[in-house]
Length: 188
Ligand code: HEC
Image (cartoon, rainbow, N blue to C red; front, side, top):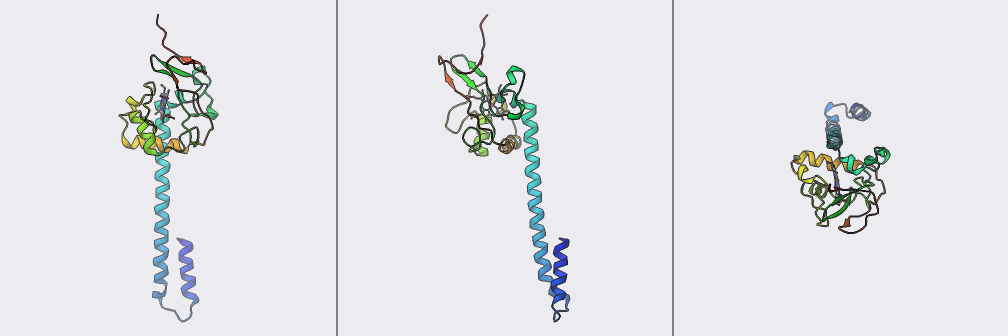
C-alpha cells in the first residue's frame, strides 16, 4: 500500500500540467482496490492454514496415524512416512483382512485424486468412491458425528500431506491368505 501511494504521488507530480490533487484520485482508487484484493487473498490463505491446522489436530487426537502408519503396531511408527499406509492388516471374521491405506496426497496410491467431498463421505458414511463400504474397523460410524467443519478440516489437512508412494496390499477376501502380518480375534 505504501509503495502504491508513493507511485501515485510520483505519477501525479510528474505531470506538470496536472497540479490539481484530483488527478491522483483514479490512481488512488486503483491502488486501494488492489490493496483490498491483496488483503482478501491473505485472509483466505490464513483461513486455509487455520483449517489445515485444525485438521492436523483432529487427526492427531483421533489417532488416525495409529492404524494408517507403518510400524505403529510393532511399537516403532515410521514417522517419516506418517499416514502413508499400514503394514499390518485387521482380520474381520467372515469379511476378510483390511490394511489401513495410504492417506497422503499421492495420486495413484493415496488420496491425491479424491475430492474433499469423497474423503468426507468415506470418513462419515464409510463409502469409497467406487461404492465399496469400508470395513467397520475403520471407525467411520464414530466419525459420522464429526461436525461438517471438522470433517472438512480433516480432508483439507490430508490433502496437504506430501505424497508418499505406497500401495497397501489387499483387501483380502475371507479365506484368502494375506501377504501382511494380521491382527485377529482369537477364540479362547
Ligand atoms: C482402528 C484403525 C483405524 C483408525 C483409528 C482409522 N482408520 Fe481409516 N481405515 C482403517 C482401515 C483398516 C481402512 C481400510 C478399510 C477397508 O479397506 O475396508 C481404513 C480406510 C480409510 C479410508 C479410505 C481410504 C481408501 O483408500 O479406501 C480413509 C479416507 C480413512 N481410513 C481415513 C481415516 C482418518 C482420517 C482417520 C482418523 C480420523 C482414520 N482413518 C482412522 C483403519 C483405521
